[in-house]
Image 1 (cartoon, rainbow over the protein chains, first blue to last red):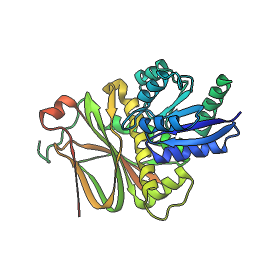
Image 2 (cartoon, helix red, strand yellow):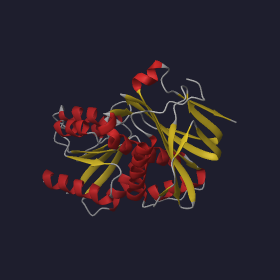
Image 3 (cartoon, rainbow over the protein chains, first blue to last red):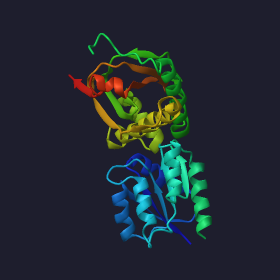
Image 4 (cartoon, rainbow over the protein chains, first blue to last red):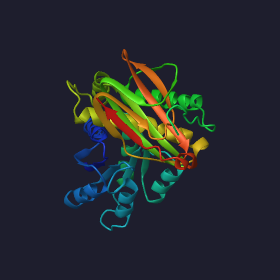
Length: 127
Length: 183
């Protein structure tokens, strides 16, 4: 079964890279949606079926940790796995993300293999 | 603080800043772009200056230390960096190129910030501001020095610069705001 993915990052360059990685992987990826911040991500979630979220932390309007918090508080979205992909590497931020329910944490700069491995793990856990 | 009397931080010497800049710039360019960079001898500068068509991307630090970090390069090198990052060709500097340089700056300075955390504590980081122009100059209002590390990359030179001062030192004069001027 294919999984739709939502990519959330205020950098259009990073969204392009992640969309390309997702499109080229042999994992069962369905539609790929994009959002530039947490607020836009919530709108995309309301209008699309999404099985996995890849989110940056430092974004305007609503950051990635606030988005994660909103998803965990929602009966509809609390089971959607979220992988944080971010430059933010302070132990406090990583711990906060894990405590809020993030299923993975990838530091920028990242390799394609790191992204694929995290997504693959999330997909296996979701089955 | 007047221009002829820069603040040289007694706590975080330029040589240590330069070492962390080199380590993290090499990592970002290698992992994210597949590009090798060769660090050149570090310099201490009073401002960020750009001749010809140049791009400067700047992020601000906040916390126990204040200041900024930046990446500056020619428009030609910026297009090469964007091409490596996004696997596309760019004939001119467009939003994709500016966004790519902003994101590279975010990674270089963000990773520098985390590597420096044992010495500086946790610092907040702003989102990048990317300036594309011709013959401009940016400097801190209270004249703190920039530690600048030039790198050779694909036959061109780009610079990574960091300016840091303890926040109580910065606030005793003015916050290290940046002023950009050009011709």
